[in-house]
Length: 294
Image (cartoon, rainbow, N blue to C red; front, side, top):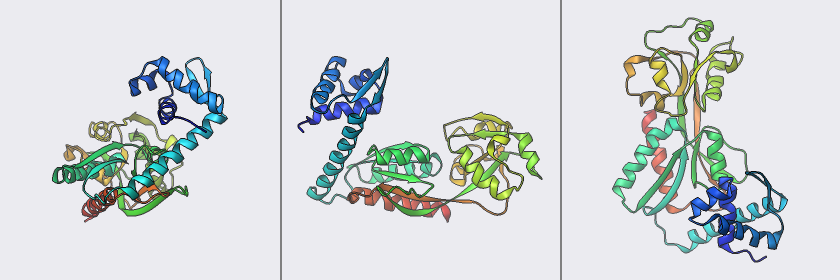
């Protein structure tokens, strides 16, 4: 099978963007050039996309080609790591973290980059499921997640724990579960899973987050506590995120028992060894998580 790496890159970009037009923009090509690359591929393997208006869907040959592209990328990673000199403080690394612990992790990695200017950190915040997908799809080399994935393609290493907190508007007191229902929930991307883990441990009456009125939603980690501070509801967040909020006087943490913790794992693809730089990054993450727990 003779498929040009340029065609393969175009195919993967179309898959990732979901559009010939967006793929052309990302690649700096014309849409006609993108279509031509795909035609070359289809001449080799057969139809790869089912086109329905503006929507495209992978056909069986397309799914097989996407799997082949991942194998090529994995082989390239292995070759680069075996052929390149050991550079533990130079190069680029892509990493995704939860918004909570990621606030401290990203700041620490920027400090590391400041000390070693040959390092380039490419970081993004995302929910756990999206981080796992990003590592599997080779969009990031490292991910920090709050659950150990069971996919054999991933390695996972425990790096610490992060306490979950029930956060209320300042001055608000609760004596029973019904008080929470009346206050209402401020949701966020990890809100339902965090609320289920904490409220299920603390309140016997809890029957699911859908039983609590939702009074708002934010996907920006630095803004989730804004409606709580304004008295509009409560939320569940890791202590790392709560401590980063700008005005602690406007929120309060409910003192509950038992305490609830999430375990943090750093994940990467299991098929190839970590680069020396990725090993440095993992050690830096472990250090910052340990410092926050002290």
